[in-house]
Figure 1 (cartoon, helix red, strand yellow):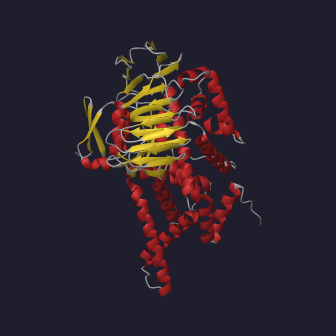
Figure 2 (spheres, chains in turn green, cyan):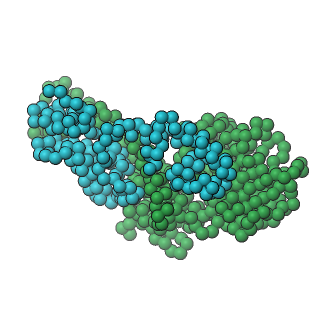
Figure 3 (spheres, one colour):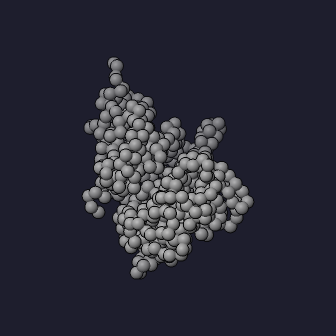
Length: 359
Length: 188
């Protein structure tokens, strides 16, 4: 790791550690800790002296205290499954072969074609060397929108600025279908996969994102949609207001709220979340709390473009908490996960297998 | 005899003295003074709330049962932090875990004593609240320019915005963060 990256990583860690300390401080209950300590000291004293016979009321009091203490301990051990601080970083893979499909069906390999992409419409498309595709309207457009599709492969990511100024960060294994220039009453795009949106404000033309399962209507705001096929669909709002609709239900979200849609039905469940946990990937790091290895591995698979299989199915449910930075190599990430758990990774070409350490 | 309990050195000496006469009272005072801070230090090393509390609780138990308070000749504060640090290292090793110190490369030796410890904590809390209020763009700009020390032109290029836009975002972000607060304390 070179010096620059080392410094950057350190800053992220510092920020992360400060957050954790603050979280602890918020949850800390001084009196309860004192009582827990006293209780434990008493139990140990009793064990040594063998004194069990006390007056009836005193015994009851201690018994009650003991039981409530046991219950709270039990609740705490639920979290024991969260194997701690696997702070993992993943690297930038070499290829970012995003493909742009134009209205006329022509496919453009964005890793090859840079600069202005010729297009028979009245919009200029520019592809710069940093995975950014911009659309600029130059003259009045025809009444029919020219649809383009951006396909981002596994291991890739791309950023888009549409003709209205809306910025979109696209995650790996995602597709977005959108008009080169917006025409008509609504600004509509179609998403499969995951993207973070910063929608340019235009009160006269609501922005709507459609996925296979739902649609999200906005005025001007920033939010994240995760809609990978066969997974739950998550819509997380950072700023502004959006309306989330499925065939069956409709809900309005406020900032730091999330709408969840199961893969097999169209109900919408809303919950409060810290939005940054679900949007941080667009800023360059990925945080998760108490997430199963199966989910983490699905994401790693997309980012690194590797196939990862579980030799032992039960390992899928191992839970982790951590933060992933966009630097370093996959092998470093694997090494850390291995060191903090009983999981072992073996690599066979482009495929990775996960098994128990003792096998 | 009056003791200035706000003076760390005096207070620690008082606690040690008090252990010789009223150990129970002294133990409570010790707990009130140091328990949370030691837990936070343990969280810093292990990144586990549960582990940190267990480690510190076990320490207080042994401290009391084995009457370690009679054997301390040196700096009480240093002794407490060092004990917790050793316990944390052992616990991590036993559980086959890496310490946050190793993972992050950040030096986590026993924190310096300072009157501003409380203030520093308050400021950290404020900063975090404010950072979360920044918009996506503003946070990116703050990160690039302040944390990563990039020049305006470089950062603007990286973020695909003009230098003017960057300056606007930065000004807005700093305004939101400023309000009686020292930004540099955290980042430098």
